[in-house]
Length: 417
Image 1 (cartoon, rainbow, N blue to C red):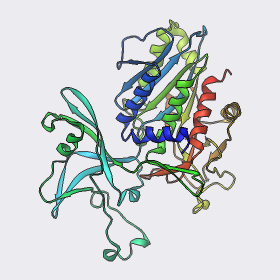
Image 2 (image 1 turned 45 degrees about the vertical axis):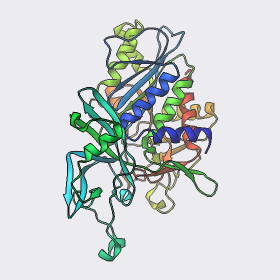
Image 3 (image 1 turned 135 degrees about the vertical axis):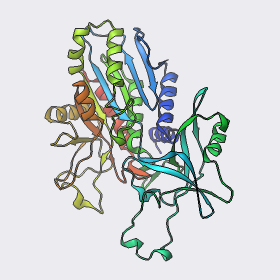
Image 4 (image 1 turned 180 degrees about the vertical axis):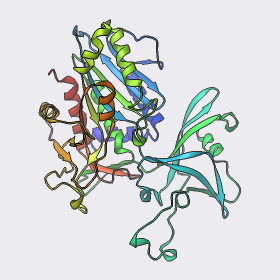
């Protein structure tokens, strides 16, 4: 792998849950000299420099330039920390026919068959009176598929009941307290646990694949590729703008939460940042209206085995650069002016670029872009890298595209127009 992919692989492997993602962003930002702030301060420091703040599974990092213009604007890269998975239920212990199982519920648009016959671990946070404790385990669980001998028609169409067929097995024999077993990996006394937020996670590490290693495969590419790219660009940014990385939680379930893009976090922080710079309140709306948000999220590469599911004139391919995401019904917000800017940033970064539009008979997905734009009134461009196996337990992309996205984000931050 390239140096960039090595770093991305390390970031993804260390980030099996949104809480781990935010911890990684904070650690890397702090190492680069950013000041870590509490959530949420009554006021922010006014000095130039970098700052980072976490609220549960969401994180906002920003940099104030040394010579801030009298009427500054924001350049915001938006992304999300969550990925489709299975969440552990509040009363998880489940026994059946001599097996110890764990009760889970589906989180987001999971490609559920991809989670079968995988070595799975648990990750998230354990809550005690002392606060939150991050935890991740090695492989402890598996959702075994029924043998073909017991279902001869399975290859004619796999049908999975979400309650009955998607229950992970973690043991056999005596009853198992799964939370207590998980707690051992965080060195937390099980008796002290007052609550938890735990998900299943794939334990296989990221890797390059292909004849010439032209692909990169990993869990949670949607959307840790964008979080990582935005962070790398922010840490390297030299800009007259106030540069921001906003990585939200709960995008995969609609964003309408305290830490989602539909919540108040970004608007609150932008207001506090402007107040810290003594920008009069009557100018706040104008500044935000003249700012820009690059909503970075995964898009679809053309699938060679299902090419008929794609628009025939728009065929994004691996290693051909980031994708501008366009949709007439405004599920993505890139318009003609946004396309011109996207093209300019790509040229400034020296990278290739592509366009994605859904086939008219295929419904479009969406992302944080329209939600943030509706809440803030900020100009928004939706873009990202193309993926295959999106929402699978293990996704894949072109090996060059993640670094292209970081370069695009860097050009976006630096652009003076």
